[in-house]
Image 1 (cartoon, rainbow, N blue to C red):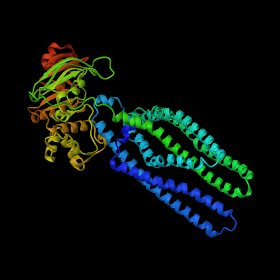
Image 2: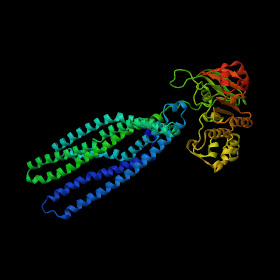
Image 3: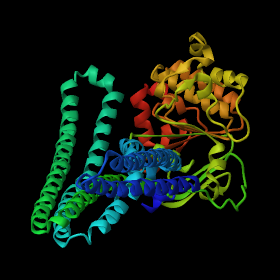
Amino acid sequence: MKTIFSYLTKREWTFLGICALFALLSIWTDMSIPDQMGVITTKLQTEGSTISDVTGSGLLMLLYALLGLLGTIITTYFSAKVGAGLATRIRGAIFDKVLDFSMEDMGAFSTSSLITRCTNDIMNVQSVFAAGAVLIFKAPITAIWAFTRIIGKNSMWTAAVGVIFLIVVGFIIGIAMLVRPSLRTVQGLIDETNRVSREHLSGIRVIHAFNAYDYQKNRFEKVNEALTSLSRKIFRRIALFNPFLDTMTNILNVAIYCIGAVIILAASAADRVNLFSEMVTFSSYALLVMTAFVQLLVIYMGLVKSLASIDRISEVLNTEIKIRDGADTKKETAQGTIEFKNVSFRYPNSGDNALSDINISIEKGQTVAFIGATGSGKSTILNLIPRFYDATEGTVLVNGKDVRDYKLNELRNKLGYIPQKSILFSGSIADNIAYGDNGRFQATLTEIRHAAEVGQAKEFIEKKEGGYNARVSEGGKNFSGGQKQRLTISRAIARDPEIYLFDDSFSALDFKTDRILRERLKEVAKGATVVIVAQRIGTIRNADRIFVVDQGRIAGAGTHDELMKDCTIYQEIALSQMTEKEAG
């Protein structure tokens, strides 16, 4: 809760103060109306009273009612502003926090869970502040104020209110204790529903191709039924509140009038008018007490629900970022170089090393490749260079400087990274190619065109309506796999980096496009270091140095010809893709 309150601004604290003041105005008017009801009741039973005697009190009650309405409107308006503003900043804070997450941090939360925390959970918190800020001020003060007005009136009436009060409080606490643990489970089931829905939408082509409609429907129905069942169970319990409170309020009214009847009948004729007036006033105050408890109940149940959401939001906001900026006190001793010194790496919650004792030295201007079986650790090696993960043991150096000593922006501005899965963003083609601001310049349209030409994307771009201004849909779904790869390669080229990192980035290209692209890249990236992770021998056979990765270790290193002579694993990969004559 403390984490959430820290996002309130001074202006919003002022708004809450205004809410408190006008809530007091509304409470004062509510407290004044029963007194006037008592006056009117007395005058109506007094002989000789006229309409004018009653009209003054009636008009005063109307004035109190209008002032109360004004107070409620103002407090509702300002509390809504507080809730909306708070939700805006929390959403922004979660978004900024997730931007700083490392791959390890992301692994602690699923994408579907982060979406739920950024939407449904924040809405729960917003609703408490928007709708509950008024009641937070009004309900407890009303209950206490009204109770002080009735506590000295009559011991029997007061005892009746006290008994009903204890029954209601016990009921509220009991239901809340039953409901609260389930509310967090509900949020988890919403996460799971989001996850299944996302998988269904992103994999719709596969679902259609394999006629897996029934399978997907059953998956969704299973998690949806679990969510529905638990939600139904929770709301059945919560639904008991209103009829229970209505029943207790009616019982209290009946008790007050029954007790009042006994008291009035036992009193003298002269005292009966005053006692009847007191009973009407007492009944009104008792109703205010019960109404205040109903409002407290709404606040409490809202808080119970929002506390589960607040805990989930706080988990994200309080996550300690695993990979942070380095001190940046050491200087670079080279340019365009990469070195791994005794590097081992283990993924979080994994018992075995993904990489063990990696020692690699890459010089400026070299083209170096990694090849090996699926899951051998090739991409893992690449991921340690931009610090998507940090090495468990050993040191990774870029330009002779430990990557952990760099500021992240400075390190990553040196790199042109092309991921294994091509990622495009909604916008224009030009926006996507110019996406990688390198801290030195923003790519111009001329540079964007040049990057697209080198990346072999120019031809299909210019055929599109709008050319470089053609729209890219979410995730680049309006482009083929090969087109997306060429656009992501063009994006890296436009950045003009010192080091290119290709994580199996040529797999969707045909052999001719692959060859032409690498030839053009060699021209424009002259002097830059190129690191390629690949499955195809044809993509890497002309590399200056090829490292064969097997079960997280370097099983061989050398040129294509050298490895064909000395490395059995490389020979097997080569001969599985080409004839012995082609492999050389």
